[in-house]
Image (cartoon, rainbow, N blue to C red; front, side):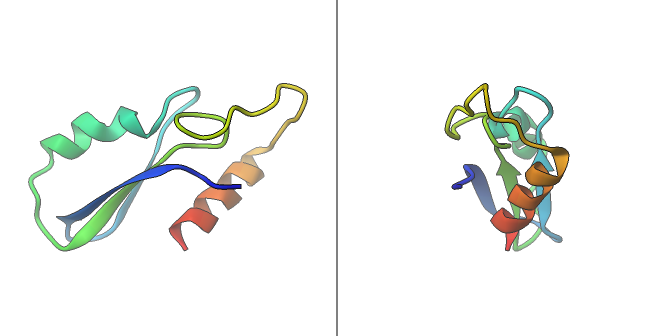
Amino acid sequence: MKINFKLYPNRVSEPIVFIHGNLASHRWWAPTVENLNPSGSSPILAIDLRGCGDNEVWPAEESFTLKDLAEDVLETIR
């Protein structure tokens, strides 16, 4: 499964991964990123969770667990 994300390169001193809450998207974090003063060469990564944002709509008859979401995030940042 392909997970959508927004990469903001060269923004901070240490990499940051932003994960939105229920039924939101990576866009939730845009105001936060815009208000940060660029202070380094590391990226910010804002991820759309499975079934949210610009990802495929998840079929209602299929379920997933918090572990599935965590594995999606790990796979994306690798």
